[in-house]
Image 1 (tube, helix red, strand yellow):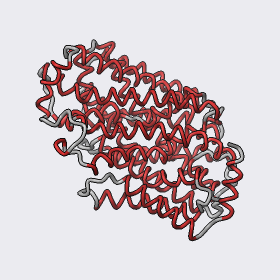
Image 2 (cartoon, rainbow, N blue to C red; image 1 turned 90 degrees about the vertical axis):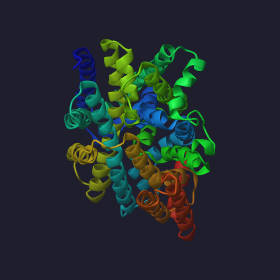
Image 3 (tube, rainbow, N blue to C red; image 1 turned 90 degrees about the horizontal axis):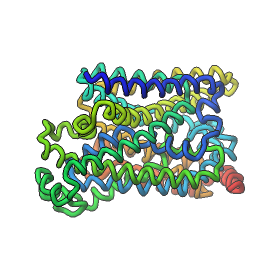
Image 4 (cartoon, one colour; image 1 turned 45 degrees about the horizontal axis):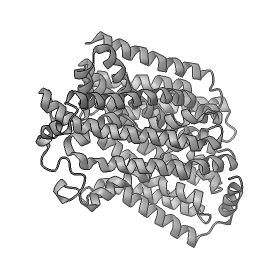
Length: 489
């Protein structure tokens, strides 16, 4: 074990835990625990949103996919870059205004319930259930990434590594709530950015800084390795469209859009959009470079590395290139990516249970008691996610893909239509979420051979069902609430 690397990671973790316990004293109400009392600045909003989005899959899953499949896998990154910009451009400001105008909603389910005057809490219940189901899968992917980091770097068993990473995430999410998550995500976002830039640049220099020397080293990937599209690279129109469809998921990601609701001054969202979009473009581009250059790197330096280990190429490159002190901080960036997503997902899932389920059926419950129900919910959801992550053969990219599809299929269409279509009704909203989420589940079970990503049919069927049902059963109350919110834009 390299104790210098371990020391760097321990110092980094100590900083995160200190932030968590400091935030503990600042989270005495549900508004503070769940939404930071709407007090985030533009930089914290932007970087915490994107750090919570780009989990360990950005540094491990996506480079691994590029390492094995070649440049055609970059279509996922292209879709995500487009989705990021559109989400900040069209959803962020409007959602911030709508959520506060409609009884100061603290969560996405609460916003939807207020938007459609859901007195029976049916919409809150359905939304909370789907959030919990798909976040279990998504959170498990982040825990798996952390386990692979500790297992690879410190040569420990997968189970021990899994428990260490899981426990660290749990402690500071349990203690500090939203403020802890956002401030640590801000720190993690900066560290991830630094690591994602310096590693591929250093790899390129070590490979000769000349593409003419690098290209021949990629021949082991096959003749189509550097092709972005076309039948020769295995990328037909269905594959390209499916990969681009990842971008649709952004509109329905509770852990991302909750940041839009939390910013202190809505006018600063335009600056947050620039920061977030720039961060995403650079880090996604770097991930692509790490995957492609990684194959050349392994070939040139004769590293004992196979396609089965592809999701660890970033870790292996750091370990080979940098001295221990520097490597320790870069490896901490991988842990950053893992923790920044898992903590956000745990918090959103817990708030769905406490604020959107428990409080809905017991409106007189004391705020302090509800706060502790949120913290206990974090623990319970973390345990279930741990159970999913126990299998060492889990693929980070596979788990992320399934979780992302479920959340996007269930919620993206309704979030868009709730903000932009006046005639969206309560019955339409409930139907759309049920149809979208169920379509993704069924598609993952039975549609694996179609070559179409489950999010795409989930989004389409959800949108169609919302529109059809809303037209058949219009809802004047929901239309009036839309008019009320729109006046504040």
